[in-house]
Image (cartoon, rainbow, N blue to C red; front, side, top):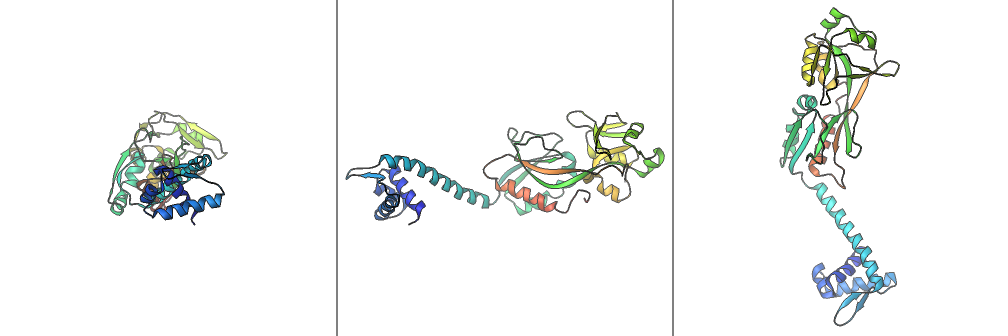
Length: 301
């Protein structure tokens, strides 16, 4: 006989206090329940139940076995529920935190495809340049670019971007091309400032040394698209990700200001809270991102 069925029959008899109620609970005959329990006792070589005409109760060994058996049955039930939940259709509100520049240029143009595929999901995108606390702030998912600060979250890297110093050909013709990192102090720099207020660039030199550039620059703004526009207009040199500058560079409106520097590649991740299983709405959205951006980056956008 099936071992799990024997275990379930025994545990149900203990829970219900008798064979008749156990049979009713399991939806089988009383004789079938008795046969399952007898088979279990025979296999184990131990009496698990005290049977009298008035009541049924577990023996000392039966009490110990019941405790372990109930855990196994509960785990089996959770496993079945997990499979059912993971195969169910995604529903409900999906709250996603996205860096503003990536959200505006890359994500917002394609989310309609996801919503058409999963019409029972409603999507709320929060575009902001800060690291949100996913659990305490009620987010299901966040997209993050670069190093991940919180290792307790689960993460999936779905594409990459490069960082480059970019400038308009007209600017480089007028001011010259910087040959060394130290030369940047003599140029007009366009800085991005995040929530921390820092406008320093971390740039890897040809030697592999990571240098910090803290020049005040001629423009500081907390929006990458504005910096891109300023660079295209010839205002100065900006340090931006490829998902922002790729089209302008392909069209000849921008150039790599220092092409001899090592390529700075940064991962783009979907991060989400840890748990025993991932909700269908979160899992399908991450799969959607991985599929849509499979051919994107680090330079091709």
